Image (cartoon, rainbow, N blue to C red):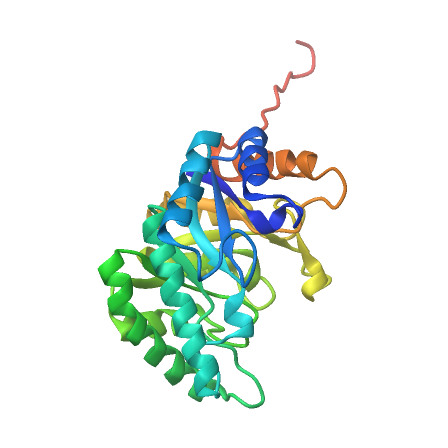
Length: 285
């Protein structure tokens, strides 16, 4: 198992080069970078620029794992406005091409956003229709669209997520599973076993169930995620790719925070679990 970190965990003012260097120095194997409306990586980034970013990561000694984006919130694939929905598809298609140019095998995709104006059943059908249009682009570029479970009031159970992906029926549309996102209404180890081989990539964060709202997210090993059970479930399903921390990190001393997060992920997923033994000496010995 490899450990990675999303650039969102780092200060926003850091350049990609700073992020690459910091991730390597903290002990991560990989870094996941993000496509935004502005900045160093956008849907309009050229092939030459994308390949240059990948080369700079290699020179820094860090691997790129996948491409994430927050554009699916501002431009949902399920938007009722046709122009917004088309922009969402165009953004996702651009993300797929960027991933290929960088030599990556997967992107993260928020498949839908359920709102008072977009009912759940309409979002389900619209999301599948959009992904079916994008599937040939993913297949041509050999990049998997990883549908992520996020707090979008959509795909609220592992059984439904399986159904959603299986109905599309393509190896190029799979699941980007976020361990911490399900703890408010489920158990990540159960999701992992039910989703099984459909999981292409993994995000990890912790969650404090006693708080139960968006402020409850925490760095790995600081909350209520049952990490030994999660690790066992991944082992059972055969997942052996990257686990990527997508967390807030430390507001102060961010490089120290990165080291702590890397150490936590290695303890949770890479190092041999450590047990405790007690030598018992009977009375009189």
